[in-house]
Image (tube, rainbow, N blue to C red; front, top):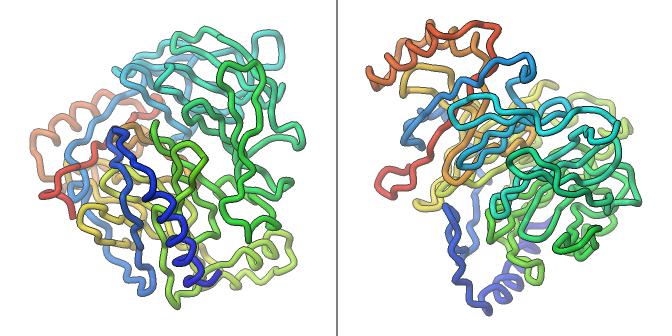
Length: 413
């Protein structure tokens, strides 16, 4: 898609956005008053940044090891509120308090009465409810934070098997469509209804209407911050936002300039094996995941070199309007010399709440990092890490690593 066309789209959308007064208050998410152009025309890859460059604090919460709550993978989806930690893994959802104590499983996994298998889930902070897409029954199950089942909503996406991802925004539920639907995501109104009602036909870019939607779980992505919804399709240069779906506006434009990108047509031929050359993606770039935790927009750029996948971390600073792209998606943990931090999972697991980003770390990885990394800035933090490492066993559940992002103009890059 030609970049000049996007400027034209931006102009039209921006006029529509500017005509409305936007006074809503958004936690850790400023009101949008401009379109940011992220310049990717001249890619320069830097050495990995230090975590202290973007963060002000780091915290570890060991999750209780319990026979009823064994976490087998450290990359699973994490949902956090001010009081509860929800871990979604292998169809089940486990609840821990903010001290890491296991509370309960949200439901029994299975197909029987009262049982569920979580294909996708999301948290509604306003209503303190947890929404689960029951993959076996193709229903949306709603639970409160105490684990009590509130109600079931029939699957609104009756014309195909299951969506690829799900999100909650205000009184709407969003589905990232799979490759049977020629649109990128669907929005349904679930307010005061026993069944979801389709309300939005995804016509934010009409020229894309005949394209197959998602091939994988990160073909499209949306991010919810209570009063605003961001969304972006993987092969589109623009990240959009909306507040109520009546107006859709551009928020970020990724200007690739003359940089070669992986286009939709080539990707679809690779996916359907019309193209089998493993080097066809060499030197072609695309953004596979992104997340904004103010003042930063994080995104992962992927390409191949010699047929091998290469991934880079982009960090755009909204305050300073600066961009840094690092050779690695990890940030050096210079706080205490512990395990390096990955702010954004390449498969689009957006683990964040307010101005904090979360990840799970295996005990043995934390032990190895502590033993190998002797570089740290805080002796006090180092002693705290030492105490934690000495209390761990390699068979324990992962540790929840919480990083608080800086929001000070004087301290940001």
